[in-house]
Amino acid sequence: METLGNLTSAELVFVLLSAFLVGASKAGIKGIGLLIVPMMAGVFGAKPSTGIVLPMLILADIMAVIYYRKSVNWQYIRKLIPWALAGVVAGVVTGDLINEETFKWLLGGIIIAMLILLIYNDYRKSEKIPDNRTFAAVMGLAGGFTTMVGNAAGPVFSIYLLSMKLPKREFIGTGAWFFFVINLSKVPFHIFAWETINFKTLATDIVLLPLIVIGMFTGIRLVNLFPEKVYRYFVIFMTLAAAIVMLVS
Image (cartoon, rainbow, N blue to C red; front, side):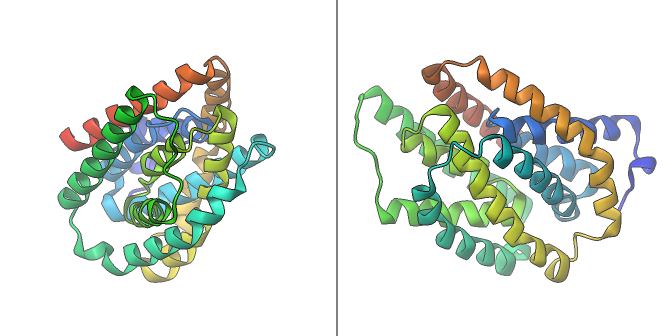
């Protein structure tokens, strides 16, 4: 695996930008997290990059759960966690069988279809929340699978919480705790099954930590500027934009 010292100037910019975006995304600037996946995969390779990105995400998760610790709805986390863990295991077992092109179109198609349904529901001004076990199971499985295979479950979970119509801070805090638990559960698989996390990758993550911190504080300041309704549509727009970028990249 390439080290930071061996990267070209362009590659180094992509890595530093990815670290900044990890922090900003976990602070609540949703949608941009999908941009990290192709940038890091382009520098380090699809599978090896997941072992670098995962510890970066966990570091940002820790900061997010501390900052948003009073804004958590545990009801939705408890519903999703068992299904998400099942999705993680499915990703471990089948991850090598799915090529990047298939995964990209599968994830992008799912995200865009769900967003269309979400926007349609908002357009109808429906107050009905799809808060049932089947919906939670489907979203949990999809989120667990996509986070294991490509660290790309942010949009899936964002759509779920948008459907629950949570307030801004509760939306961010609940997501932070959910991903903190799920990302920690993935670590043993990356170390012992895929062997994508080692001392070299962890050293890279430590070097990138200051950019993650800067991204986190920048994201927090930006999120605080958004009114509740504007933030909701910002997340929808950014999630759709990121899905489209992923499909055409």
